[in-house]
Image (cartoon, rainbow, N blue to C red):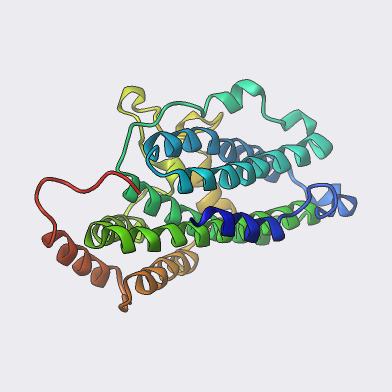
Length: 285
């Protein structure tokens, strides 16, 4: 089992909201209304770990090890929402999300292949790590800069934990796992070809709720994410390239061969898919 080791590792670096956030360094002159609004939107987005955890537990009922790890991931992701709300409670109480705004992002996701979902969230952690690093640079107020840096480090550790489960899946399911991971890897490393921000919170997940079946579509400002990325933190081609490079680097380690471009990963995906029976891939992680 991976859960006991991951628990010990993540417990050893867990930060304390009271002791490790430099609340005393707050500088009101460095926090604009525009910046404060983005903190509220990120607080609500992080709350969506709740329906994501419900999805993971539902779709991995046959995997108690991974399901137990969800206790760590869920706790730390909800803590992200909590620390952003605590920041607003202290310094901009008028912008603290309401319970109704938080609850709006909780809805049931459609069942999906667990291997593909695992890879999707692995890539999501890589992307969010880079988004938060850029947010820490964009913000000017010292406390929120420190918070975003702290959150980015958590997201990187979560990505590392997901990678451990992906390695385990390849050892167990071989080419089925490789094909699933490569398929989603090609999608998530191709953001430059789409107008859509490729992150789990911005993907459609429920036919019954369409078109309001993304987390972002249920925020008080559904257009916020694109503005945050393009106009505020300016997540440009240079930063997008960093995300793609990290995905390709990790896929190279995982598959034990080098992928320098998305095209090379896509060729590998086709090779793996050709080895599988036409009856469909395994559904569990």
